[in-house]
Amino acid sequence: MLSRQTATLAATILGSSLAFIDGSVVNVALPTIQNAFGASAAATSWMINAYALPLGALVLLFGAAGDRYGKRRLFVWGTILFTAASILCALAPSLSLLLAGRVLQGIGGAMLMPNSLALIGIAFDGEARGRAIGTWSAVGAIGGAIGPVLGGWLVDSVSWRAIFFINVPLALGAIFLSLRYVEEHRRHDAAPLDWVGASLATAGLAALTWGLTIASTAMAGPFAWGAIALGIVLLIVFVLVEARTGKIAMMPVKLFGTPTFVGVTILTFFLYAALGGLFVLLPYLLIRVGHYDATVAGASLLPLPLILGAASRSTGRLAEKTGPRLLLTIGPFTAAIGFALFARVASADIEYWRVIFPALLLLACGMALSVAPLTTTVMASVDADHAGSASGINNAVARIAGLLAVAVLGFALADATEDRFVANFRIAVLGAAAMAVAASAAGLLLVRNPQR
Image 1 (spheres, helix red, strand yellow):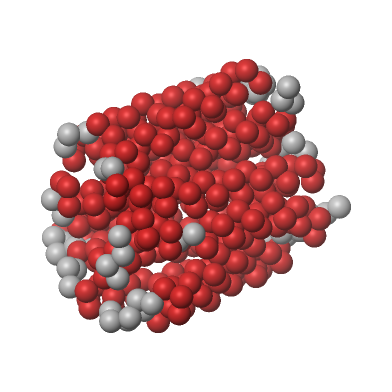
Image 2: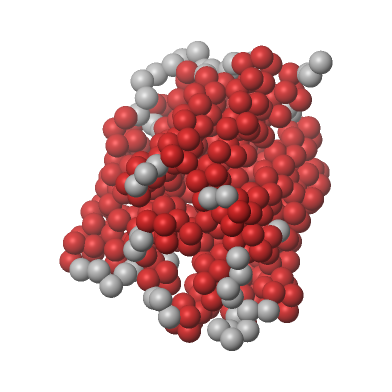
């Protein structure tokens, strides 16, 4: 008989794995999907952004909704929607329907991701919470490791459509455990949801993302720059509205009243922007320039999730004992060295063990030192009533960072020549290294260890 804590952890891991696996699988399948539909570089970017946009824009809203109307309820309904959307993606006869399915996946992910972590934060306390979050991160990383290899094999041996059916058994397990074992938790002072804030955030991010995606291709023009300007204005208005909205705001501004929360938010943005951009470009590099097949390209990424999975539980526990500041300084800086090492790639020499593996190894060590302490710090910085909102903000920042990075990187995907793509790849990874250094500085200067 499972205990409630064990069942809660298992359910949230299975549910969150939908998002972890889906991201890694789709990245490996992108070249094949692009060929299947004859898609342009901009359309290829939207295969990622159609998922990331609603996930980034709505994760705040659904985090707050979980606080008010029930974390388990939002988690279960998000899992159901994600599964139905995955089936739509698998059966989509056209690119437009595939993108529609990706949008619905993003909405489902926005419902389940913040409430997944919030359920863990409520079920566990103290060092047990650090271990639980470390386990959550570790298993998610292992799922991310299996995803590219299994997805690459399915793409090579069956069809790219098969990758979306991976989600169905995971979702069924998460739903069963949630309904059978997980306790509901909601705030008693339920208030209307912040639809104005949600609308402004979604419209602002959509305009900004569309503008950046178009501006980074040969189609750049006044409409692209106008969309970027409109997106920035709408996001500024969103922040002002949230500051005036008060308690019902989907992004409670008061959570940013401590240097630690500001620090982990900045750190999350820079680190996940760097990582998100790399993991779109690297499979492209291996498949299109290195001429790897999809299975081998997926297996080539294994060092990152395997090391992350092996170390996350220990680093989560270590962060609870020693405080997160040191780990959140050393981790991103180590990742920065790994990003910089990718710049050694040359068109005529994409030798895995000499060029790709050392860079992945250092990047993996840096991320292993960062991920679990980062998540633990976010959850420990607020009370239980705001756990969903805090988790939602952190998830939103991570997804928005990746969303904007992919939009900007259209310049790399748009160039068909191998030499030009490699040159663009080098520019991108050096930019990623700079962002990881900025993340390290945020950890050093702003994060504070909790008083004991």
